[in-house]
Length: 351
Image (cartoon, rainbow, N blue to C red; front, side, top):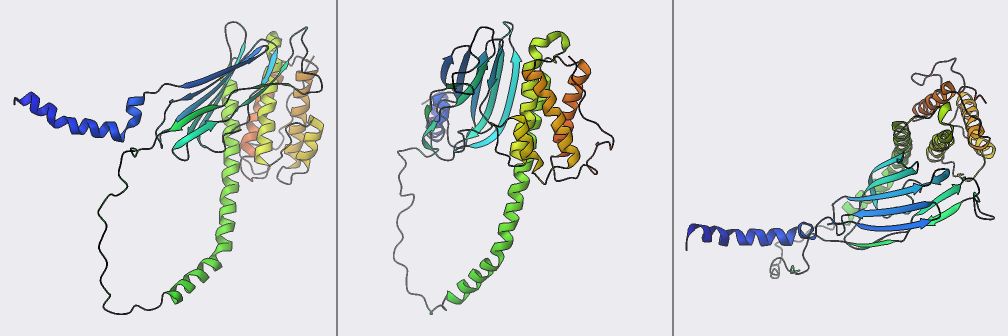
Protein backbone atom coordinates (compact mmCIF):
# COMPACT_ATOMS: atom_id res chain seq x y z
CA UNK A 1 0.00 0.00 0.00
CA UNK A 2 1.51 3.40 -1.04
CA UNK A 3 1.68 6.50 1.18
CA UNK A 4 -1.34 8.28 -0.40
CA UNK A 5 -3.58 5.22 0.11
CA UNK A 6 -2.51 4.94 3.76
CA UNK A 7 -3.31 8.69 4.25
CA UNK A 8 -6.79 8.30 2.74
CA UNK A 9 -7.48 5.25 4.88
CA UNK A 10 -6.32 7.00 8.07
CA UNK A 11 -8.43 10.14 7.41
CA UNK A 12 -11.66 8.21 6.73
CA UNK A 13 -12.64 7.76 10.45
CA UNK A 14 -12.03 11.47 11.10
CA UNK A 15 -14.31 12.51 8.24
CA UNK A 16 -17.01 10.09 9.36
CA UNK A 17 -16.79 11.45 12.92
CA UNK A 18 -17.20 15.03 11.69
CA UNK A 19 -20.20 14.05 9.59
CA UNK A 20 -21.88 12.42 12.63
CA UNK A 21 -21.14 15.16 15.16
CA UNK A 22 -21.85 18.08 12.79
CA UNK A 23 -25.00 17.26 10.82
CA UNK A 24 -25.46 20.97 10.03
CA UNK A 25 -22.41 20.84 7.73
CA UNK A 26 -24.17 18.47 5.35
CA UNK A 27 -27.55 20.15 5.54
CA UNK A 28 -26.44 23.54 4.22
CA UNK A 29 -27.89 26.90 5.20
CA UNK A 30 -30.98 27.13 2.98
CA UNK A 31 -33.74 29.32 4.39
CA UNK A 32 -37.45 28.71 4.92
CA UNK A 33 -39.60 31.53 3.53
CA UNK A 34 -43.29 32.39 3.44
CA UNK A 35 -44.97 35.37 1.77
CA UNK A 36 -48.39 36.97 2.08
CA UNK A 37 -50.09 39.90 0.35
CA UNK A 38 -53.10 42.03 1.18
CA UNK A 39 -53.92 44.97 -1.08
CA UNK A 40 -50.97 47.38 -1.22
CA UNK A 41 -48.81 45.52 1.32
CA UNK A 42 -46.61 42.44 0.78
CA UNK A 43 -44.97 40.66 3.73
CA UNK A 44 -42.15 38.11 3.62
CA UNK A 45 -40.88 36.05 6.58
CA UNK A 46 -37.54 34.25 6.24
CA UNK A 47 -35.97 31.84 8.74
CA UNK A 48 -32.45 30.52 8.25
CA UNK A 49 -30.79 28.10 8.33
CA UNK A 50 -33.44 25.62 7.22
CA UNK A 51 -32.24 22.87 9.60
CA UNK A 52 -30.30 24.44 12.50
CA UNK A 53 -28.31 22.50 15.08
CA UNK A 54 -29.13 23.08 18.76
CA UNK A 55 -27.08 25.99 20.05
CA UNK A 56 -26.68 27.62 16.62
CA UNK A 57 -28.19 31.11 16.14
CA UNK A 58 -31.14 31.42 13.77
CA UNK A 59 -31.85 34.58 11.77
CA UNK A 60 -35.50 35.61 11.42
CA UNK A 61 -36.21 38.43 8.95
CA UNK A 62 -39.63 40.11 8.59
CA UNK A 63 -39.97 42.46 5.60
CA UNK A 64 -43.06 44.50 4.68
CA UNK A 65 -43.25 46.49 1.43
CA UNK A 66 -46.06 49.05 1.20
CA UNK A 67 -47.20 51.31 -1.61
CA UNK A 68 -46.70 55.06 -1.16
CA UNK A 69 -49.34 56.54 1.13
CA UNK A 70 -49.83 53.35 3.19
CA UNK A 71 -48.98 53.45 6.91
CA UNK A 72 -47.65 50.10 8.19
CA UNK A 73 -47.42 48.91 11.82
CA UNK A 74 -44.89 46.09 12.20
CA UNK A 75 -45.22 43.43 14.95
CA UNK A 76 -44.24 44.55 18.45
CA UNK A 77 -40.79 43.50 19.67
CA UNK A 78 -40.80 39.79 20.52
CA UNK A 79 -44.46 39.31 19.56
CA UNK A 80 -45.23 35.56 19.16
CA UNK A 81 -41.55 34.72 19.84
CA UNK A 82 -41.70 34.08 23.60
CA UNK A 83 -40.75 30.42 23.15
CA UNK A 84 -37.35 31.42 21.71
CA UNK A 85 -34.41 33.32 23.21
CA UNK A 86 -33.87 36.69 21.48
CA UNK A 87 -30.15 37.41 21.11
CA UNK A 88 -30.31 40.48 18.83
CA UNK A 89 -32.91 42.77 17.21
CA UNK A 90 -32.40 45.28 14.38
CA UNK A 91 -35.34 47.28 12.88
CA UNK A 92 -34.96 49.28 9.66
CA UNK A 93 -37.08 51.51 7.42
CA UNK A 94 -36.31 52.88 3.95
CA UNK A 95 -37.88 53.96 0.66
CA UNK A 96 -37.11 52.03 -2.53
CA UNK A 97 -36.61 53.64 -5.99
CA UNK A 98 -40.32 53.12 -6.78
CA UNK A 99 -41.36 55.21 -3.75
CA UNK A 100 -42.56 52.22 -1.70
CA UNK A 101 -41.87 52.05 2.03
CA UNK A 102 -39.75 49.05 3.07
CA UNK A 103 -39.83 48.10 6.76
CA UNK A 104 -37.85 45.22 8.19
CA UNK A 105 -37.16 43.54 11.52
CA UNK A 106 -34.22 41.17 11.93
CA UNK A 107 -34.03 38.88 14.96
CA UNK A 108 -31.25 36.54 16.04
CA UNK A 109 -32.92 33.64 17.89
CA UNK A 110 -31.94 30.48 19.71
CA UNK A 111 -34.21 27.47 20.16
CA UNK A 112 -34.67 26.14 23.72
CA UNK A 113 -34.32 22.47 22.71
CA UNK A 114 -33.89 20.19 19.74
CA UNK A 115 -36.84 18.63 17.94
CA UNK A 116 -39.85 19.96 16.03
CA UNK A 117 -40.68 23.68 16.38
CA UNK A 118 -43.13 26.13 14.82
CA UNK A 119 -42.66 29.83 14.17
CA UNK A 120 -46.20 31.19 14.73
CA UNK A 121 -48.07 33.44 12.34
CA UNK A 122 -47.08 37.12 12.54
CA UNK A 123 -49.55 40.02 12.35
CA UNK A 124 -48.81 43.16 10.28
CA UNK A 125 -51.35 45.98 10.36
CA UNK A 126 -51.70 48.93 7.98
CA UNK A 127 -53.85 51.98 7.20
CA UNK A 128 -54.42 52.83 3.52
CA UNK A 129 -54.18 56.62 3.21
CA UNK A 130 -54.03 56.65 -0.61
CA UNK A 131 -56.61 58.86 -2.33
CA UNK A 132 -59.73 56.95 -3.37
CA UNK A 133 -59.15 54.00 -0.96
CA UNK A 134 -60.84 53.11 2.30
CA UNK A 135 -58.29 53.79 5.08
CA UNK A 136 -59.52 50.84 7.21
CA UNK A 137 -62.12 48.08 6.99
CA UNK A 138 -65.55 48.93 8.34
CA UNK A 139 -65.67 48.90 12.18
CA UNK A 140 -61.93 48.14 12.40
CA UNK A 141 -58.87 50.24 13.23
CA UNK A 142 -56.62 48.82 10.50
CA UNK A 143 -56.22 46.13 7.85
CA UNK A 144 -54.63 42.93 9.18
CA UNK A 145 -52.13 40.88 7.17
CA UNK A 146 -51.34 37.50 8.79
CA UNK A 147 -48.40 35.38 7.62
CA UNK A 148 -48.37 31.58 7.55
CA UNK A 149 -46.54 29.68 10.33
CA UNK A 150 -43.20 28.05 9.59
CA UNK A 151 -42.47 24.50 10.78
CA UNK A 152 -38.83 23.51 11.23
CA UNK A 153 -36.70 20.99 13.13
CA UNK A 154 -33.70 21.72 15.35
CA UNK A 155 -31.09 18.98 15.06
CA UNK A 156 -29.40 17.43 18.08
CA UNK A 157 -25.61 17.16 18.30
CA UNK A 158 -26.03 13.51 19.39
CA UNK A 159 -26.78 11.20 16.43
CA UNK A 160 -29.87 9.00 16.61
CA UNK A 161 -27.74 5.88 16.21
CA UNK A 162 -25.68 6.57 19.34
CA UNK A 163 -26.12 3.87 22.00
CA UNK A 164 -27.58 4.85 25.32
CA UNK A 165 -25.04 2.70 27.21
CA UNK A 166 -21.81 4.64 27.27
CA UNK A 167 -20.10 2.17 29.66
CA UNK A 168 -20.84 -1.34 31.01
CA UNK A 169 -22.89 -1.52 34.21
CA UNK A 170 -20.95 -1.63 37.44
CA UNK A 171 -21.16 -4.58 39.73
CA UNK A 172 -22.74 -4.55 43.18
CA UNK A 173 -20.97 -2.39 45.72
CA UNK A 174 -19.51 -4.10 48.71
CA UNK A 175 -20.69 -3.45 52.25
CA UNK A 176 -19.33 -0.33 53.98
CA UNK A 177 -16.90 -0.83 56.78
CA UNK A 178 -18.82 1.34 59.26
CA UNK A 179 -22.30 2.80 59.68
CA UNK A 180 -22.61 6.37 58.50
CA UNK A 181 -24.41 8.97 60.60
CA UNK A 182 -27.94 10.10 59.75
CA UNK A 183 -28.06 12.82 57.00
CA UNK A 184 -31.22 14.43 58.38
CA UNK A 185 -29.57 16.98 60.75
CA UNK A 186 -27.43 18.34 57.90
CA UNK A 187 -30.39 18.47 55.52
CA UNK A 188 -32.44 20.29 58.16
CA UNK A 189 -29.73 22.93 58.67
CA UNK A 190 -29.37 23.48 54.92
CA UNK A 191 -33.15 23.73 54.49
CA UNK A 192 -33.46 26.33 57.26
CA UNK A 193 -30.63 28.38 55.76
CA UNK A 194 -32.27 28.34 52.34
CA UNK A 195 -35.64 29.28 53.86
CA UNK A 196 -34.11 32.22 55.74
CA UNK A 197 -32.34 33.53 52.65
CA UNK A 198 -35.26 33.06 50.24
CA UNK A 199 -36.88 36.52 50.83
CA UNK A 200 -33.56 38.30 50.21
CA UNK A 201 -32.90 36.25 47.08
CA UNK A 202 -36.41 36.95 45.79
CA UNK A 203 -36.05 40.72 46.31
CA UNK A 204 -32.66 40.67 44.60
CA UNK A 205 -34.15 38.77 41.66
CA UNK A 206 -37.03 41.27 41.35
CA UNK A 207 -34.55 44.15 41.36
CA UNK A 208 -32.43 42.49 38.70
CA UNK A 209 -35.46 41.80 36.49
CA UNK A 210 -36.68 45.39 36.83
CA UNK A 211 -33.25 46.77 35.89
CA UNK A 212 -33.05 44.33 32.97
CA UNK A 213 -36.50 45.35 31.65
CA UNK A 214 -35.65 49.06 31.99
CA UNK A 215 -32.37 48.62 30.16
CA UNK A 216 -34.01 46.45 27.49
CA UNK A 217 -36.72 49.06 26.83
CA UNK A 218 -34.11 51.79 26.38
CA UNK A 219 -31.87 49.70 24.11
CA UNK A 220 -34.81 48.73 21.88
CA UNK A 221 -36.06 52.32 21.59
CA UNK A 222 -32.55 53.70 20.98
CA UNK A 223 -31.99 51.09 18.26
CA UNK A 224 -35.30 52.00 16.59
CA UNK A 225 -34.47 55.74 16.75
CA UNK A 226 -30.98 55.24 15.31
CA UNK A 227 -32.44 53.15 12.48
CA UNK A 228 -35.05 55.84 11.73
CA UNK A 229 -32.43 58.63 11.69
CA UNK A 230 -30.16 56.57 9.44
CA UNK A 231 -32.65 57.00 6.61
CA UNK A 232 -33.38 60.16 4.57
CA UNK A 233 -34.32 63.13 6.77
CA UNK A 234 -37.64 64.74 5.67
CA UNK A 235 -38.10 68.47 5.29
CA UNK A 236 -40.91 70.92 4.44
CA UNK A 237 -40.18 70.36 0.75
CA UNK A 238 -40.87 66.59 1.15
CA UNK A 239 -44.25 66.87 2.85
CA UNK A 240 -45.39 63.49 1.56
CA UNK A 241 -42.80 61.78 3.83
CA UNK A 242 -43.24 63.94 6.93
CA UNK A 243 -46.44 62.13 8.01
CA UNK A 244 -44.74 58.72 7.94
CA UNK A 245 -41.66 60.12 9.72
CA UNK A 246 -43.67 61.57 12.63
CA UNK A 247 -45.77 58.37 12.87
CA UNK A 248 -42.53 56.39 13.31
CA UNK A 249 -40.95 58.95 15.69
CA UNK A 250 -43.96 59.23 18.02
CA UNK A 251 -44.45 55.45 17.85
CA UNK A 252 -40.91 54.91 19.15
CA UNK A 253 -41.57 57.19 22.14
CA UNK A 254 -44.98 55.61 22.90
CA UNK A 255 -43.70 52.04 22.71
CA UNK A 256 -40.74 52.98 24.93
CA UNK A 257 -43.13 54.40 27.56
CA UNK A 258 -45.28 51.27 27.42
CA UNK A 259 -42.27 48.98 28.00
CA UNK A 260 -40.33 51.23 30.40
CA UNK A 261 -43.24 52.11 32.73
CA UNK A 262 -45.56 49.11 32.07
CA UNK A 263 -48.22 51.27 30.37
CA UNK A 264 -50.02 48.58 28.36
CA UNK A 265 -52.24 50.92 26.32
CA UNK A 266 -51.16 50.93 22.64
CA UNK A 267 -54.71 51.40 21.32
CA UNK A 268 -55.52 54.58 23.29
CA UNK A 269 -55.79 58.07 21.84
CA UNK A 270 -53.08 60.58 22.70
CA UNK A 271 -55.21 62.26 25.39
CA UNK A 272 -56.08 58.99 27.14
CA UNK A 273 -52.48 57.83 26.80
CA UNK A 274 -51.27 61.03 28.48
CA UNK A 275 -53.71 60.40 31.34
CA UNK A 276 -52.01 57.04 31.93
CA UNK A 277 -48.59 58.68 31.76
CA UNK A 278 -49.52 61.41 34.25
CA UNK A 279 -50.51 58.71 36.76
CA UNK A 280 -47.00 57.22 36.69
CA UNK A 281 -44.88 58.29 39.71
CA UNK A 282 -41.68 57.61 37.75
CA UNK A 283 -42.05 60.61 35.41
CA UNK A 284 -41.40 64.15 36.64
CA UNK A 285 -43.76 66.99 35.87
CA UNK A 286 -41.17 68.49 33.52
CA UNK A 287 -40.93 65.28 31.52
CA UNK A 288 -44.73 64.95 31.42
CA UNK A 289 -45.11 68.49 30.07
CA UNK A 290 -42.46 67.96 27.38
CA UNK A 291 -44.05 64.64 26.40
CA UNK A 292 -47.51 66.22 26.20
CA UNK A 293 -46.30 68.95 23.81
CA UNK A 294 -44.36 66.45 21.68
CA UNK A 295 -47.26 63.99 21.20
CA UNK A 296 -49.82 66.73 20.50
CA UNK A 297 -47.59 68.34 17.89
CA UNK A 298 -47.01 64.90 16.34
CA UNK A 299 -50.80 64.48 16.07
CA UNK A 300 -51.03 67.80 14.23
CA UNK A 301 -48.60 66.48 11.62
CA UNK A 302 -50.12 62.99 11.39
CA UNK A 303 -53.84 63.80 11.41
CA UNK A 304 -54.20 67.50 10.52
CA UNK A 305 -51.41 67.24 7.88
CA UNK A 306 -49.72 70.39 9.18
CA UNK A 307 -46.28 70.81 7.60
CA UNK A 308 -43.63 71.60 10.28
CA UNK A 309 -40.59 73.76 9.67
CA UNK A 310 -37.14 72.19 9.46
CA UNK A 311 -36.33 73.63 12.90
CA UNK A 312 -39.46 72.03 14.40
CA UNK A 313 -38.50 68.66 12.89
CA UNK A 314 -34.99 68.82 14.36
CA UNK A 315 -36.33 69.88 17.78
CA UNK A 316 -38.76 66.93 17.79
CA UNK A 317 -35.88 64.55 16.99
CA UNK A 318 -33.75 66.12 19.74
CA UNK A 319 -36.59 65.77 22.25
CA UNK A 320 -37.12 62.08 21.44
CA UNK A 321 -33.43 61.25 21.94
CA UNK A 322 -33.12 63.37 25.10
CA UNK A 323 -36.29 61.89 26.60
CA UNK A 324 -34.96 58.34 26.11
CA UNK A 325 -31.57 59.20 27.63
CA UNK A 326 -32.99 61.04 30.65
CA UNK A 327 -35.51 58.32 31.59
CA UNK A 328 -33.38 55.25 30.90
CA UNK A 329 -32.68 54.97 34.65
CA UNK A 330 -34.54 56.18 37.74
CA UNK A 331 -32.79 59.59 37.67
CA UNK A 332 -34.75 62.80 38.53
CA UNK A 333 -34.85 65.40 35.76
CA UNK A 334 -32.86 67.89 37.88
CA UNK A 335 -29.89 65.52 38.09
CA UNK A 336 -30.14 63.84 34.67
CA UNK A 337 -27.06 64.43 32.49
CA UNK A 338 -27.26 67.00 29.66
CA UNK A 339 -30.70 68.22 30.81
CA UNK A 340 -30.65 72.05 30.90
CA UNK A 341 -32.87 73.54 33.58
CA UNK A 342 -34.50 75.94 31.10
CA UNK A 343 -35.06 73.39 28.32
CA UNK A 344 -38.38 74.01 26.65
CA UNK A 345 -40.83 71.92 24.68
CA UNK A 346 -40.28 70.88 21.08
CA UNK A 347 -40.58 73.69 18.56
CA UNK A 348 -44.00 74.88 17.48
CA UNK A 349 -45.30 73.29 14.31
CA UNK A 350 -45.96 75.91 11.65
CA UNK A 351 -48.59 75.61 8.94
